[in-house]
Length: 140
Image 1 (tube, rainbow, N blue to C red):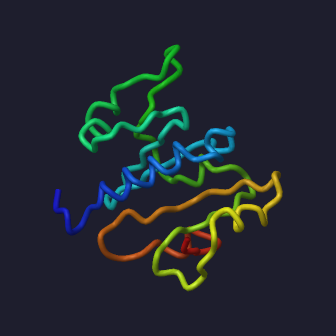
Image 2 (image 1 turned 180 degrees about the vertical axis):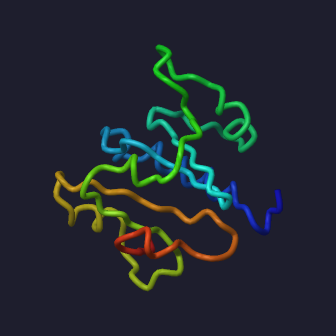
């Protein structure tokens, strides 16, 4: 793949941060999705332990099953992603280009426990998150 167009390092870094975060460990992350530039949608099980290398993540793990045969850790699923999201969720885009800069911990404290939050991470070398797919764009 052309490293100037695709950024698997950003995807890997984001997955590491999400999967080892306090909110995931508290059971508040229900699912993570990766969407490629070609529109392929990959569902990441929240129980997934993210490996250290990108090769292991995208090659070996697509065929790895969770303990107890409870499904695959990474699974290609059909679009659109909206069919997998909770009803009345708040979709928050994360981008360094956002003019709204927040402290993540303080920002998360502003929401009640009954709000379903969905985070959208742009993992492309150029361009930005499509604003029609998010409710708010922030930078941390």
